[in-house]
Length: 486
Image 1 (spheres, rainbow, N blue to C red):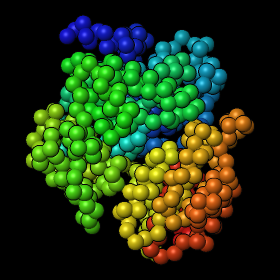
Image 2 (cartoon, rainbow, N blue to C red):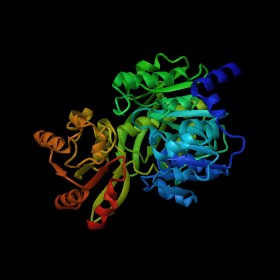
Image 3 (cartoon, rainbow, N blue to C red):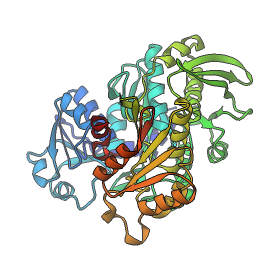
Image 4 (tube, helix red, strand yellow):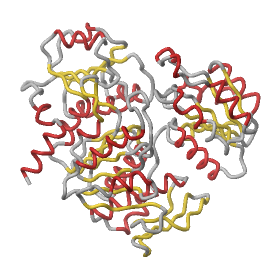
């Protein structure tokens, strides 16, 4: 057992990271603190009693609000002066480049530093049962649902999620139990470690929801993405578990190579855990869950959409493996309040509902529109999409985006921000997308900026509409601005 543990520590870089932690540790500084994961890690350090500071140039809610509520000082913008006086330990977020002024100053002074995943393992995951939720789509909701379920049945897990859990009004908790539930991101770790974050989390129990090409700024192609997930599967110990989405052919194929036990879930009849008799009702989504073809449990969930039913299935598979009484599942899952920015109702005014969602990949956009269409039957769905992520600002998904808005009644697309960071020959075109949508018969509009977009939306919506706003950023606070003017 000890030999297996040492091997896992070597693969995750845990031994190297341990050597970087000073004996005297009081002040921790986080560079890029307002990122979702970094803000959560800051909260974990604060909960452990350390003096915590941080710096960032993109300071906006909800993470900035969460940090201020915890009394954590945020230094706006990056500067070498932010490291004076020198902290005992610096955590470098993956938004920080080697030419960042604070990174340059860090290289000049004698201060220990770690990446976010290294620090998270050392200060939260180490010596606990690590539950890693990974996948191109659905990992935030699945991580949040897993954490809430374990909390509700008395396991008291620690967790860190890429969003604010409404049940906890937080994105993290240290927890007192043996389990730590972590959202396993495939994005790179830091400028000094270009490997995926999830390799640092010492996975024991792992869920993989999906594998698809994304993060075009760091991955060459789909095979490159698959290679990262393959490495994740390789480091799950033989006594661990992989819960795999059988409906995703790539996940299923890669799961066959695992040296640990594999449990499958999905809508495929061969899946161990399967959902049937799905009905959208006023009180939630009704679903019957089968295990190996036999009735296991019936649920009513506030989550909706087939992608969320799949997420629920994976969490039920996890609960079953841990040994949670299935009779406790309906109440626990029904009380889940969701994650901010995941199909979140931001407000309703004059009969118009405004939703906020983090969807940015073409598949996520399509599934989110489909889910909202199913939930709000008989109402027009007004899709507002900001192509803001590193991948969506590139031309790699230009054609795919033109195929995913068919279920929306109207589509509004702004000019992407930060286009100067993308090579000129590889830039996404909002105008090109709107033209392509119109050619497909989709009622689409282009706005050169958020002000123009809001005017266009207000000129075209009416009572009964559902405005679905999708972006992985703040989107110029379009949600509140729109609600004020409706």
